[in-house]
Length: 146
View 1 (cartoon, one colour):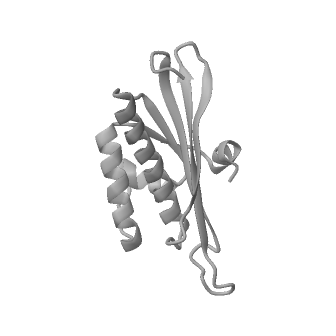
View 2: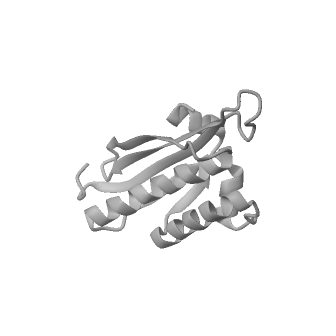
View 3: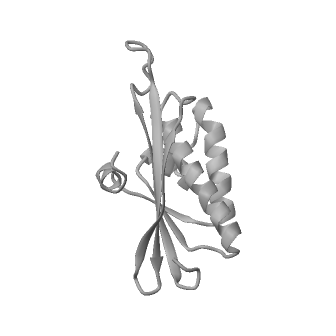
């Protein structure tokens, strides 16, 4: 979509984990994530701008994967703004209530494994000035497939 016709972007970011927080049993914890960016034009035209699948072998909980998926989408958007040399109108959707309430300031981030991720996501959101919303897991699955 050409910059002159771009109205706004809608982002969906989600993380997940198989054997979440439970490395016993099979001994394998697999964390993953993805984000999708859809571009909408002033004429209501739509196109997929980016769909990125992510693997997080260093993570062991779904909350770490949720934060990192959001962070990766924010880094992509920051870099896109820099390339386009314009401020983008962006709406971000996440389905993690924990991540949403922590970033909205209605819950504190207390888990040591999340504090660095929380700080990075919060800093990126503040610097970019984007609005973010919570959506249901079913809505997220319909968009991202997980």
